[in-house]
Length: 130
Image (cartoon, rainbow, N blue to C red; front, side, top):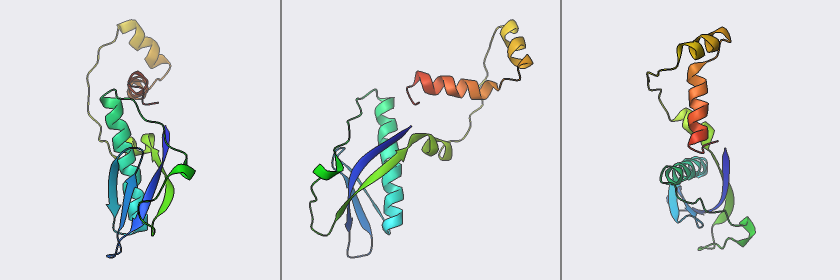
């Protein structure tokens, strides 16, 4: 699932960029523009996942045209938070033991079903991450 929010990017005197999400009251920075964009995307994903974990409402993004800059040297850009990609690159697998009825196991194995993938899909659905 992807989320897209406007962010204000401000070049700093030291070559870094500050990034502020006015809708979310969160901020980050990067050592250069590319790093700032990546950091902003990661921050957006972390914020979305924290909201989902805490069962908080995820605020709708403002129209990019309505965002006002705080400083004249900045610019507004849309930042994409790709939750699926973020979780895939930032998660390690954890072994779990589960129990299913023998008949269900037999049927699933005959169909060569991937238990881990089905469990992951079900958990994401139950947690509203899809």
